[in-house]
Image (cartoon, rainbow over the protein chains, first blue to last red):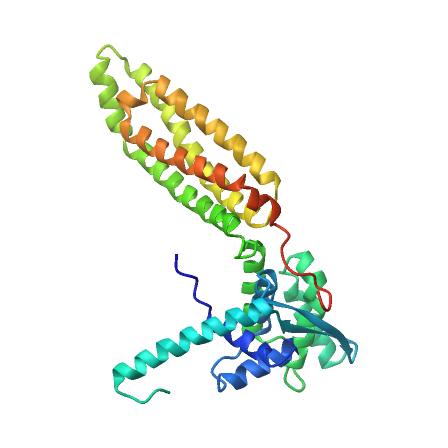
Length: 108
Length: 220
């Protein structure tokens, strides 16, 4: 059976964590940057996705900090999360290459 | 009261939509994110942010809590949804074929009085249709319970399966193979779905892999 395709928000969250651990607001800012401002995650959506990713073992908690009396929890990619992100990125790349080839454009 | 305190109080009210256990673990950090994203001097929560919190909170209450890698548990949840759909189909078939059952019964039992026929419908078919409608809710409840890793759901479902097996055999003894073939057919399909679900939820992989997420502790 074909594996379930990763949602764009999930892909971008994992991509944001690929360079190192980040806290919630850092992930939101990084996802906006990676997507050129196209994807703006809201807090509810972000924590719903983080909870699912943690449940699936793709991310884990790296550390916690208290900044100005507020909790900051940092998340990081697990090896399994890195593998899944790489697989998904390769799939996107392959699909994009096929699309560019059929359009007669140079590979993006 | 400062703007920030007002805003935080407002967001805390919206965060009450989340399950208690989730709030205990994540409320402080979600608040940190919400406050970090607030505009200067903002006193009230953003409506879109509130809608997003409400939507995520409801989803958090309903969605399965088993990891996607646990195929047997995920398939069991899916099968419960299939069961709900088949149960709905069964209720529709029973209600839609009452007339056919009546003509079959009348044809084979010409001496049947109106009162006797009414006893067949009111005493057997109508309760079965009502039970099928209740059972749709039961299937959905089982999907939720198994998705949440509640082990007792397996026992409850096994009892439900036993009860339905008895119902099917009772229907056969009552002549459903003669008078109500479509009802019998959908009943057998439903029973097969239940049998598959029982086999799946008692699968050993399901029993040992309900531990859920990695711990919420740094380095976990």
